[in-house]
Each structure stands twice: as C-alpha cells, then as structure tokens.
Length: 161
Image (tube, rainbow, N blue to C red; front, side, top):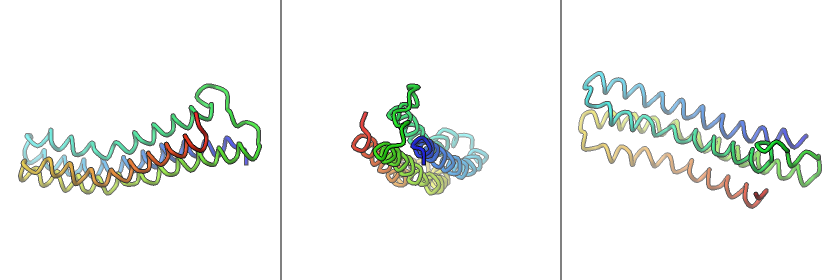
C-alpha cells in the first residue's frame, strides 16, 4: 500500500474518532446543562464549564492531525515518504498507529460526557460540588492524555522531526 494512505488514515482517525466522541460527550452533558439552566439560570456558568470538558479530546485529535501532517511533509507541501520503500511504509504505519492511538483514547469523551452530565445535576442541587464534578470528569480525560503522550512518543521516536 502507498505510504500516503497510512498517513492519511492516521490523520483522519485521530481527528475523526476523537472529534465524533467529543460531539457525543458534549451532547450528553449539554442535555443535562439545558435541564439545569431551565431549573435556574444561575446554573449556566457551571453547567457550561462542565459541558465543555469532553471537547478537549477533539483538540488532541486535531493536534495529532497537524503533527502527522507536519512530520510527513504534507503540511509543507512535500510528502517525505513518497517512495514506496520498506522504511517509508514503516514510518507511515507508525503515523497511522499514532493517529489511531489518539482516536481510540479520544473515545473517553463519551464517558466523560456522562460523568459531566451527572456533575451538572449535582451542581444544580448543590453548587459546592462544582470542583468535585470537574475532578470526576477529569478522571476520564486522563486516558486521552495518555493517548496523546503515546502518540507523541511514537511520532518523535518512530519518525522524528
């Protein structure tokens, strides 16, 4: 297979899966936020902050997309792995793996949205639970951060800048 296919797949999977998962997570939390704000408009600020937490996985996917595009030369206009050599296929497959890592760990945005949704409900009843709600939701985020770190390690050690 042509190396550009692996690179393009890595970029698409990183941004696509993480972005879709963020959409689901934000949607789940947004439904709870709308309910909390309907009960009391004072809940808007806290609900908005908790609702936005699952969005970060899409940012990690976008960062990974740009890094893959940069190290492969796509962003600079000269694809570095154009020749179908074994070395280029391996480097391109590493970039695919980096993208897949971020995409799959980005699925953590869905449970993060569920946790944030519960946090929004809790904060609507007791505003003193806001910090705890953020901490609970951030626990799901940890997996996405690990995925981003893993992808960075793959990109730097496997392909380099």
